[in-house]
Amino acid sequence: MRSFYVFTQTPDETLFTWLDSTAQRTVGARQWIYPNAAKKVLYIELADDLYDELEPETAQALLDHFGGERPQSICVDVSRHYTAEHDVKAFATAILRRFGGVAMDDESDRLWTAETIEAGDTHHGHRFFGMPGAA
Image (cartoon, rainbow, N blue to C red):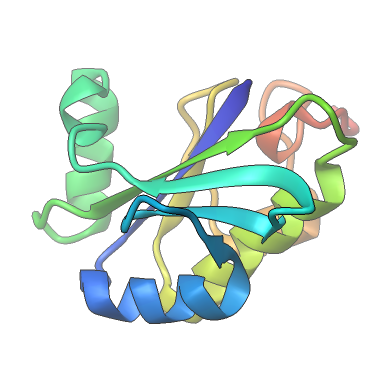
């Protein structure tokens, strides 16, 4: 599986409510499937330990972006069984538009906003989540 990550300053309960309305919650209290159990494209989990695994420069960039506060980390694993470009873009932009923050894919250390994802901005010749784009 490939992954992307969303960082925001949103309380757990607010995220739970939104995720419950957007995706199907699994048996785990902090895990969801998007769009639903019949079509498992994205596996979403609040990831408390993710921040500790980041490269120091990335962690500092996030602290700078969030005014010195450590953000909430959301890990989104993407199934390889589906063409997921639409679902990745739709989910990432929806959560960022709703709560603010940034996303990061496993292809680069760039921090992406909803606006840069929607605009199709590129970083080293690729759009968000490594989707090919004009250089």
